[in-house]
Image (cartoon, rainbow, N blue to C red; front, side):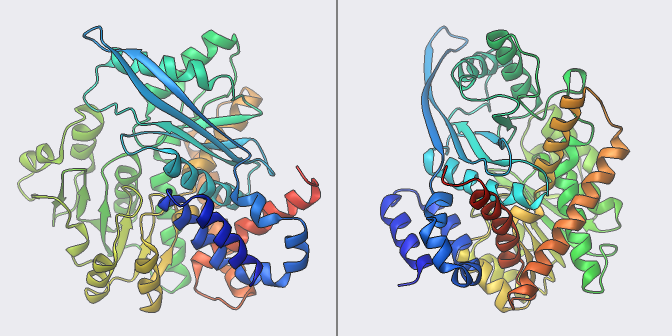
Amino acid sequence: MSYVDEVLAKVQAKNAAEPEFLQAVEEVLESIRPVVDANEELYRKEAILERITEPDRQFKFRVSWVDDQGQVQVNTGYRVQFNNAIGPYKGGLRLHPSVYLGIIKFLGFEQIFKNSLTGLPIGGGKGGSDFDPKGKSDREVMAFCQSFMTELSKYIGADVDVPAGDIGTGAREIGYMFGQYKRITGLYEGVLTGKGLSYGGSLARTEATGYGLIYMTEELLKSHGQDMAGKTCVVSGSGNVAIYAIQKAQQLGAKVVTCSDSTGWVYDPEGIDVALLKEVKEVKRARLTEYAAARPSAQYHEGRGVWTIKCDVALPCATQNELLLDDVKTLVANGVTAVCEGANMPTTLDATKYLQENGVLFIPGKAANAGGVATSALEMSQNSERLSWTFEEVDSKLQQIMVNIYHNIDDAAKRYGKEGDYVAGANIAGFEKVVDAMLAQGVC
């Protein structure tokens, strides 16, 4: 049995109740098989695959807080510090009822390779809680965040582990967490990214993941003799990533005709009105029914359906495993050219395979949505230097990082005879850098 197969079997046996984590490990290990086969004796001796698939450490803790009725509520908090071979652990905090250890491990494992691809010195980690900020008052969110950070503060630091936002964790939540960290430790340091501009945040951080996704998509299309201008795009989601992906795509001349939330989706053949979408989602924190009510050209539909709309480019920007085999069959039948992931692992393994087999240009999230964490690392740099760069400076660095990532994953795929397989290219390019660092640092 090959080394890859041995480790896959061990991971599957050990983590049988964590399907998202197993999916992420299988995708990575299968695609780096040529690299491992070429170095099997060394990697086996050094237990590289066992070490890279086992977190350095993982924390699970109780989060008790008091709601507006005076009732004590209890949630579970998590932080998984996966691999710090190339820098401090870096990865977001997800606040969503679906959060459990397997979700956090899958996200942390993906983060190792995503962070490596940025070219910046950041390792992989992730955290969060099953707390749902939706429907909670600001005071309730603050109470939760302060309790969450009281425990989390024991394990993080500017040169140790630097969390950021994710689903459910925006500027409000980061602000409350940062205030509590400062209160507990007495330190004013860059321990969190995604901070407000008045206390160490970076310009362009809010836009970074969505903008970076489009910069990547644009470079992909350019490399295949195409352009974003004139393309029809469908986008899922209506959070931070989706909003700013829509904005940048339309700035580059594309027309984005869909967005979605957890209850339904909107089709707007005239193109999504970004200002209205921001008002509904960022200001009112409302459902997309309000977008449709205010926009005569928009049609609102309950449930799923974004992927039924004919398009040139599909951008899944909502959550994991939202793009299924039947969805991609519809996209392919409708002539889609490219699918680039704005969310973390939004496409199932069988759907990914179908897209690749049918000649669709496909870029995985660990490459396509790396703009967010890249700009978080730029925020860390600004905090360390006590500087603040202009929006244009940060945006320019972001665009160059995304262009570099595309060419690095393209080159890696070609080196191993997998031209056009950007999943393999992303995993190989990310893996090689981390493994070099692990081997250089000995058994640790």
